[in-house]
Image (cartoon, rainbow, N blue to C red):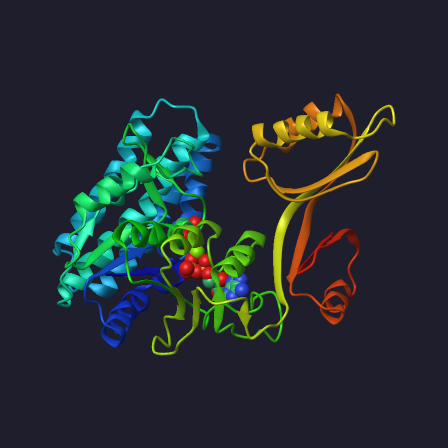
Length: 416
Ligand code: ADP
Ligand code: ASP
Ligand code: MG
């Protein structure tokens, strides 16, 4: 069996959906399970919906209308008549969402987020499944929430592998073409959960693992994995092969072309991952497999924006030792800060992290009681794997370096 994943960029409009068929025609689609993300930037749009639900209810309906219009435009382009049952199926999803807003009593932002945000994927897969069926690509629409079981850590749920394996074995017949949603799962009460932004790649890996798939292919708007995000860095080069370990490192440091959790399940069963262009599906793209390192071996550049750099020192100039560090880490965990770099000296401790859950104020309040705190918000964290002097020099040019850390293969530089 093969697993394909089509991301938001690949299905951002009606032509994108048509192109899915072109890809399937060119590369084959026997015994394939297709994981699909929300169309275009719809996950961001649903994030705004959640925000309005909590903070500006007056604007909620008009944002929902925008989302409806976006999908309806695509539907009208793909299907000849509004009498087609796909229209009804999509409208039912919007009604479900309205019912949720009317009946929800939970004040928990993260819970509400997951119940709302998942509609992006539910809608996209409904449209694509109908369209493929219409065009003769007979497929079954699979509700991923009956397959991927997680805990209830909303917005970054952890997979319950045993339950997931059991559900997938039950639900998937390996000789059928399936269309299912990326990014989503469900908890033990069957509430929708999400695996973290950009989590659809991970969904593909979870299915591949549980189905012992032959390969996973993620279809992108780039030729494969490059040695830097072409939107950020100039003159990027295509990496032809990458080892699992190297890909895990690149994803960990923030190479957003692959979600960081994707590689582990694939590595465990040595399932190759192909990253290919949905515009040129016959090109080989990048393969992540059991090889060593990367080919070609060039410096790889990664940028993480909107980080927080926090520096702490003790109020009485005593050393920052195990006790303080463990206390700091407990607070970072409590406020769900995703730590990227740490550096400590005798009397100070610096940490660079992602404030995904918007808990910075609360964290600062806690820390200021115990430490002298300075911080920079919205800093950029650059990582270069396989760096050389020229790469560091080029990167640092014209920037103020706030923190720099060199390891054997990796340098990390925080700038503002
Ligand atoms: P999708 O969600 O549609 O699967 P993404 O937008 O998440 O796709 O990922 C594709 C984008 O990832 C590219 O357009 C590119 O800008 C970005 N990207 C970041 N790092 C890299 C990299 N090292 N190689 C290629 N693309 C990268
Ligand atoms: N739609 C989700 C997101 O945009 C998941 C994904 O695309 O991978 O984060
Ligand atoms: Mg994405």
